[in-house]
Length: 122
Ligand SMILES: [Zn+2]
Image 1 (cartoon, rainbow, N blue to C red):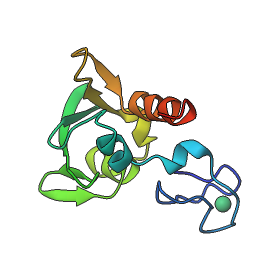
Image 2 (image 1 turned 180 degrees about the vertical axis):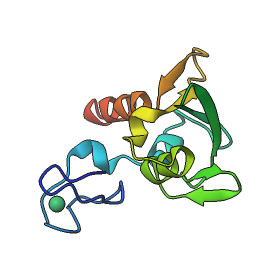
Image 3 (image 1 turned 45 degrees about the horizontal axis):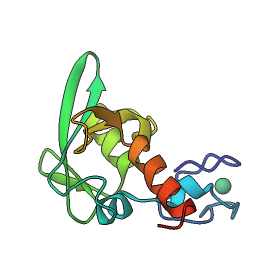
Image 4 (image 1 turned 120 degrees about the vertical axis):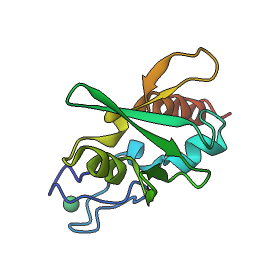
């Protein structure tokens, strides 16, 4: 996730910016692995990202990494850059199908659901 103070790109699980030490928002502490552990998404789920009118497809792995064209990427941001060749906020670019409803949502939707669960103490 990008540091809001210095725009340094940090791994999603970091609590503090690796460059300037500023605290990163709580949303940055949720990883795809956490979302898998909570059962909101499953290993092998298809992730899609739209680029120039086409849908690019990748696979969510059991360790929370993203597999795209036989390479694995550590987080949504790295995967998004690889797939699109340009940066975007991976949490809002990647879409996945919700198992309960069959509807497609940006993966930030699942991050939000997990943060809500944590706040409610489940
Ligand atoms: Zn920073």
